[in-house]
Length: 405
Image (cartoon, rainbow, N blue to C red; front, side, top):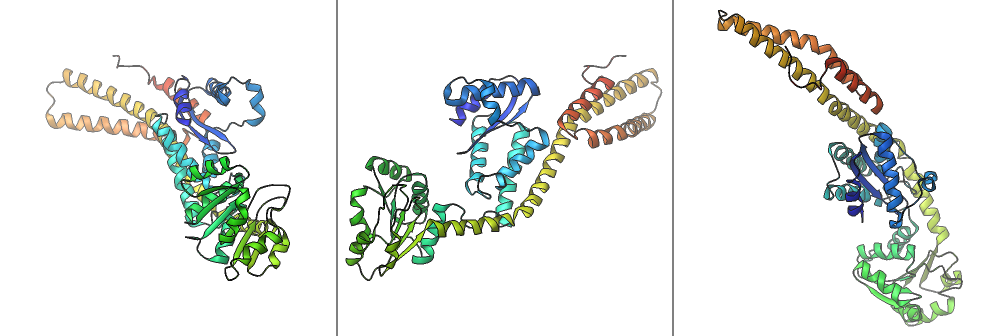
């Protein structure tokens, strides 16, 4: 879907480069525009058509949109990639989503030099933040916290029988993580079809309907309950019946449902341990507090990478102007030298070399200060860069082809 969207973006004449970042909570377009006003209008037009494949009035989207330019846009992507601009600070998935946006744009051939450099720097910053700070340490989602809690009670989940009750958002997230842990997964849901669909997406496990819960409890090492049902899924009687056939084998239950799926009285049954969402929420809050202490260190990483990006952009923006200026000066120098040597055929080879050397020194000294100032001033911001480029082009007539006598 992103590939098709990026291909469609290439048809807009004012959009020179583009990449799209899509997460569960946002769609962001990073673009290099030929003209700001026309380009942003085309982007909004594209988003209106892109939404569900139907046209949408631009004003309907305004309250949900924001536009960042130049340095602000660079810094924003760095904050996204490092996890500082996520609903959950340090969110683990976001760096992979940024990488996927970069890969998709490469495949669609919608990237140019600017966005290539921006995304490479963002990915580098994201990796540095996670390897050098605590921003990505420990779990901050209830589902992942439930699995970590289970591991502290039963050890490795590899080969363990784990039941997930409920195939909603949190249940699916827990099931996905359990697959990576090597657990023997059974997913129970009100409808067998939904459970089967999730299991198929995960590439393995067993799907069952809720009526088989009693039998599944007899075989489980861990249960993660997350149905959102209005009634209890596991009461004390059901848990006692399950434990009666396995008195020496402990059962660990994590209830992440609101309202509760598991009767608190279950924890009184010998061999059964129960953790509810209140305990997990406290763990998540503690982890978030720990991650917040890492923010200043992550911001230092962002500043470092942002500085590199700005330096690179300044240099890349200055190069065409400097190249045109030096090429024109050198073309004039060569033309005048040729004219002089034609008029003075008696000059020796050594005299010619001395004159050439002197002409190169004159050009170098004459252009040294302007070139230095160009490098210093060419981009304090995007608008100023364009202004300086126009002034220099007009003053030195750099767009004029050829040398007139």
